[in-house]
Length: 553
Image: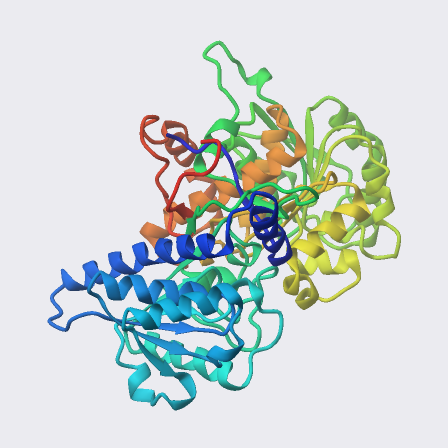
């Protein structure tokens, strides 16, 4: 059984609506769902206990289930009861009072007491009691939290994290307590989990930093909550390897270089010829049949040496050897003879060149990938993004947070506080597909689709990797993918290749050219995939796994 679907990501409000629909319309009792959720987490806890028991440690594993006074705490009561019944040492720690529990949680609290589980009130617990567990289950808040933690709840999270620092394995239920379900932001303080078992569908905040890091490895517990309800559409999606494999362009045996797209890279300036070279290399390694680099005449000789596989065309330049305004007609002619244009890497910030970028944005009729200083050219004055919105051909923007902030007139911190919201706003302002780079890149389409890229790590924090990505997007557009699929596929392969290289280089020191050169091998690994008769296995730590198959698989 192979998953051929992307994982949908939901917000807290959407998950509540799906819960309500399942309980009220489908008549599945809330207590049944709570029982199923608790048992799914027990599966992961029992696996952790077995792993510890099989290790060299002589201590008997023991579990502490930290329960809040809401339905997430109700899940915790189910977990504690089942662990006790299968003979695992367990203590439930109650944060809050049992007198204010919701009905389903209260029923499971009574059941837990009836089988003899020990209960410890958080306000009475000593620090050494918190630090004694080898496994801690975080069942404090889940998706219900929308405020900054304080008081007893804050202290409970800090104690869980101290237990983690002391070597305890922490398993969070649904969402690590203290993480905003919709943005992944930390609400004052948050649990640092080894694993998270999220209920029903994965949440948006688990796919965005810093929520992704706090969640650890994420498992999705499919417990019978309906995935669809009137008026509820998932906020975003995460592509699985099967989706990526299905999306890769087919390379027929009878094909030739003229059939796989001719990419024009408009790039380069003194001191930044590397950006032009890396964009052309990214396009070539991603399968473009032909690549031409249009660069200022003053740096053409340098690029002739650097870009062995790509053709170069010297373009009229300024005294500073940057692209000149007078070159517009020539560049438009070059673009007309090619399939797609990648514009902006390493062109510099000269105003004349920026004006040229705006003119080309109006007049180029081919699919366009706009990157780096090509993007900055549209942020110097309010309203310039309307030029992009007026384009009829597909357009993909590939900003990092600083460039996105300049285009929207906000700060980089504003962008990172709500990366999905920022990508949507930029998409709406420009009518373009937006690939907002950074940890957990976000791809937004004008029709409302959002994807969050699940891979890529700190080794991508290196000059030139964004230029490679721009070239990759251009190559996929040239091979016939639409703008959304080209951007989402490029981001996934870009991150997956970096992850693969990190196994050799570690988190730093990878060169952008090494990344580009490794792209074909990564694509071949994806094409080979897994045994079609076996479940789709998670290939990387940050990819969602599952406790039950995805619907429709």
